[in-house]
Amino acid sequence: MAKKIKVLFIYPSLSSFIERDLNILKEEFEVISYQSKGKKNLFKLLKLVLKTDINISWFSLGYATSAVLFSKFFGKKSVVITGGWDVVYMPEIGYGAMRGSRIRKTRFALKRATKILAVSKSTKNWTLKWVKRDDVIPMYLGFDSEKFAPKGTKENMVLTVGQLKNEVTIRVKGLDTFVKTAELLPDVKFVLIGDHDPKLAEKWRSKAPPNLEIKDFQPEEKLMEYYQKAKVYAQLSFQESFGSALAEAMLCGCVPVVTKRGGMPEVVGDAGLYVEYGDAEQTAKTIKEALLSTLGQEARKRIATHFTLTSRKEKLIRIINECMK
Figure (tube, rainbow, N blue to C red):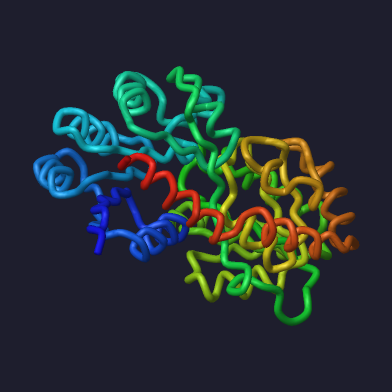
């Protein structure tokens, strides 16, 4: 019986899309998962790199640089997944990790890793701004179309998922435009769901129009109920590397209304409607059109066809096996 490849899976927090990758890898390999806690645990990270054959870092952050450095020194293989914010620099809105000393460290990881994966073609392009490689692989996230599926009757509701954390996150996700759009459509219910800063959320609730509900973090099953109720899912972001919530909402039959920024056009294709970032009047007009459309069926079909868990699994397994040859 062939010996299983030992994989070290490194991540900052267990988001749903990261957890899906972890579960995929556990089906095929011997996996040790490690949540990075910063520089104080570098010795532990080193020991784990030495115990395993290959390490995978979700996001090109400090722990990825350390893992790649240790791997090069001790003859191990390394994979870095660039997810968006980690390779983006947008000073006009104060967004992105690529600034100061981070540039040099990230360039090292991107240059020396055995393989680089990017969550979209847009993210690949950002990655290539910092390193010259001809083998950066765009590899889309995968979703469970049986789990995320339409149910019940759609309501005259517009949903978005985004965090009221600070002014940067508000601008990046276009949440100010979402609120302005709600004011322009008083007869339509708007719902904003996210892991908000309590004080900031309370401030926004106090000035929100009556038709806008600001909900705190919801567990996945509860969030899916909102996807299933909403007729429209709006992602009005300045930058979005992929749009995991967008894809989940589309699987539940929501009509997507998005900006043509980042990886969102790759996700939505012709199965949704597009608006200019920050244009509340145009967004309100487009949402009225979306509420009357039947694009929800096409939206579900697109994700179920092009962004499957099976495809993600096959590619991840193949890349790891190729690295170990």
